[in-house]
Picture 1 (cartoon, one colour):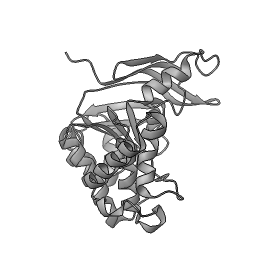
Picture 2 (cartoon, rainbow, N blue to C red):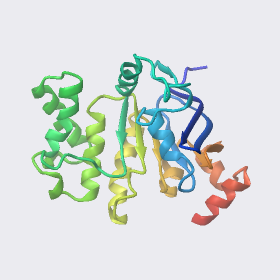
Picture 3 (tube, one colour):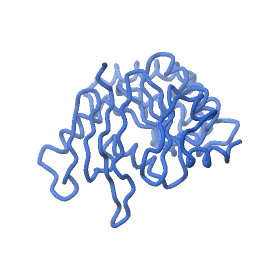
Length: 254
């Protein structure tokens, strides 16, 4: 059996006295596109943010591309090497958010070239050359010198995907990447994600786009109330969900 590229085991996370994740475990193989669905507030985005250590879990273990962090007690007494370990883990992860988070005072190319130059010590000339290639990949080759305000939401989100790819990640994480877009702009962003899937990029997508989840995913994870309720391939979970909670949730989209 292959070692999963990404593994989450027994993950717990609370905010104050409110538990958000209640022992979540998930393995993702290299090249898989996994959609995480579920009602608002069920812990989907928190799970994604814990994978990238934007939130520090209370307990459990996270492993990405061979970098493993045991999470028990980190919030109360983080070890001295936690920042270094988290930085090493993040080097394998690209993250795309609901909001585009592009620097408004920088051109699109400058936005994309910044992280490789600053965090990876890639020479600026090389970072810009790679940025131009990535803009071509996401269909924005003619937009390198534009500023974010001069672009549509769909174009900005595609630029954000290119920025995440610029650090050459092992896995891409998306937190509802189309939720801030007008409906007519959603398809252009999802098309880029499907293209990356065809190229073998490992992707985990928190989404409310049920059609995309069904059409593009290798399998789908349904969460409710901080737990993974069901994991199934895209056809089975829509045609024959095993759990009543899954049936109830998917019934809203029929």
